[in-house]
Image (cartoon, rainbow over all chains, first blue to last red; front, side, top):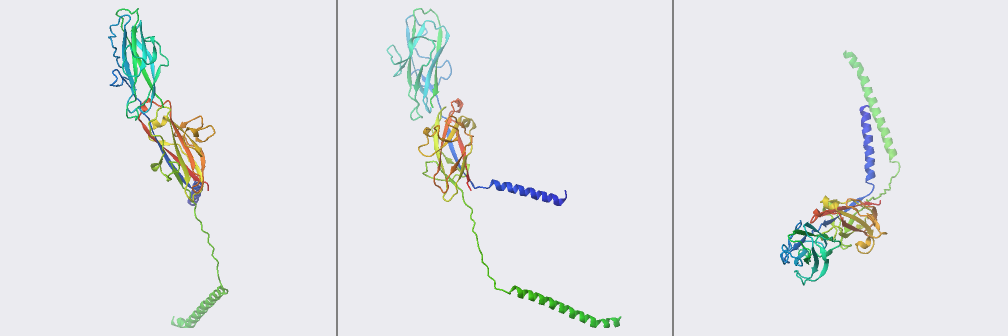
Length: 194
Length: 210
């Protein structure tokens, strides 16, 4: 192609580009920008065995329940009592539903049964009453289903939420075997409610 | 040689005379031409047309029309009034934004662009949908089956990066276009996202109708 031909071809190309650009600008344009800021809440469940000091026990075996009698020296017919309390820690942004899961057993728990009560104040003794979460006579590692209670977040959320007080009553049946030894671990699984 | 030069002198004088006549004759012709140009009176009429480009400009309000401002850049965007409290899985937050043109502006079309964000992990745990509504408050009541969905549907919520359908905006600042945003934290949001924060920025792109 001659030099003049190339120049003309280039000019023609430029003209086509120009037409394209004009089409894009065939209307006026303006934009509005809007933002939304979203923060994920926090969520933390704590337990206490004395009703005042709360701590995380996020992994098994967790907190050791303070039974009133020495649970290491049970005789047939004995009942031992242990209180426990759970609450949502400070800065937890939402309430929760807590599910009590079936205890996992180690060793032998034969002839031991329990009752779990939700009471109105911290403490657990023979006279403790309240909402029966797990009915008396349930085996220590008996299957639990749908055992739940509700925890509220603190108000304001910079405070810890109100506690739920629990009472474990463990009874040894007549058939308790001398020297048997076992442990039960309950999981309180809290799930945030939105 | 001298004789020949002397013999030519009368001839040279005649040539000069002929040239002068030719120049004069040319001048005469020019003169005639000039006279012809001035052979009539002259007058003109002038007409003008004034051409002004139209304008197209948008404003938005995040407090239901209380204050209107332009937010033409992502760095100075309108901060929508979503609930500031921490979200948990399944938490749903609502916030309205109204868009209008400025006084004298043309009408146009608005297209909501997918959001950019500054925390990809948390943004991925959020879904949204947007309706255009005409009355009432921006809350769950706007997201009915028959609502005008710009993003998502009555049955589905989509990622924040999803762009929306086009919708009209009226000319000359009347009849603002009202949009209601609904942002949901997915039930599958990971436990590790607790306490995190994300800012999503949406561009509402306007194009004039003419």
